Picture 1 (cartoon, rainbow, N blue to C red):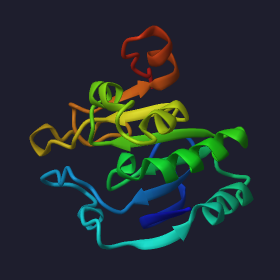
Picture 2 (picture 1 turned 135 degrees about the vertical axis):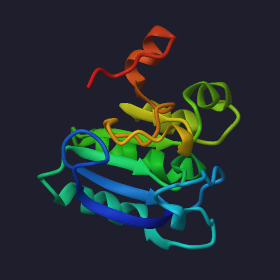
Picture 3 (picture 1 turned 120 degrees about the vertical axis):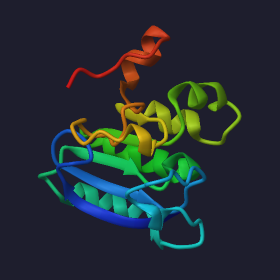
Picture 4 (picture 1 turned 90 degrees about the vertical axis):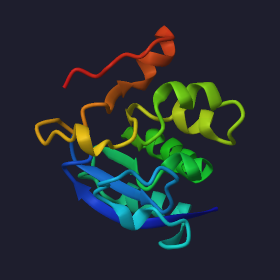
Length: 167
């Protein structure tokens, strides 16, 4: 299985809690005005990686606390990200995902969109919603605009309602 990647950050401290291995998906339908990563917007760019090789690379780094699926839009390559997330969880590491889709949209479409349910089921923390330039706030932790939420996915799925992380 292959994944189209805009870039990798193998030891990030700004894309989630702890030291993160960040995979930036190539391709994003949202194309948010003021996006900090506009090179990820095109579905034609990026580099192709074998997902097993990324999993091996993640496993080889004992310093990371987990991975972050970012973008672009990771839900547009849900099968590959779900596979990587599942393997990462089996290593005892956590999974964060950033999505321009809001949680409610993901939940309401997870049965019809291939592998959305599997990806969401392997995510611990979701930062949801599009970046909105008019709501930019540099004081926010792990997000760019005030409309975005940091959601505890396991608790949200268990309770049937959004549970925000307390960071």
